[in-house]
Length: 166
Image 1 (cartoon, helix red, strand yellow):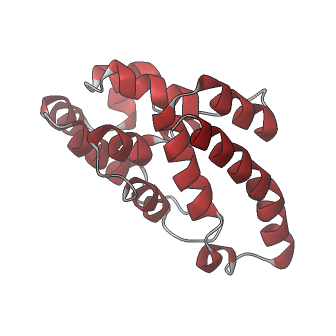
Image 2: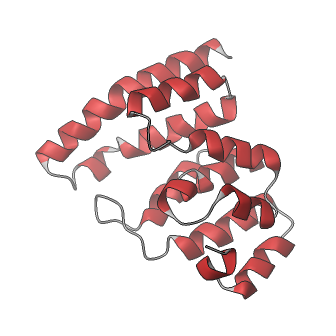
């Protein structure tokens, strides 16, 4: 699928010409996720912006916005390069993208073994927001338990690794 089949050519041009990586990321996710909802029924954009808001620096903020873009849209790594995202940003997004063949535990272990502090910081912000009590309260008791069973051990592992890298 071509990029022009995913987003309008005028937006491709606008994003490509944008100088700041964070502005590129905002324009892209705002377009792609405006009608997508998460498992709680909330607009998915809220999650992406919530993760990104944890960071002051350009890279973490931008990658925080883009952390789910490959998993949840038809955008590819090549598309991100065409749109002018820096290679270091694309590499971080690639690391944050869970592979189809990976279990969640294998995915977390891969992130930890990367020793990439940007990726680990974003994953912590992502997990923390996924475990937010207000979000969890919108799920059934079974779904809530499933989320916590998945995210609590992952958060502990990522936090421990991040502390060792300080």
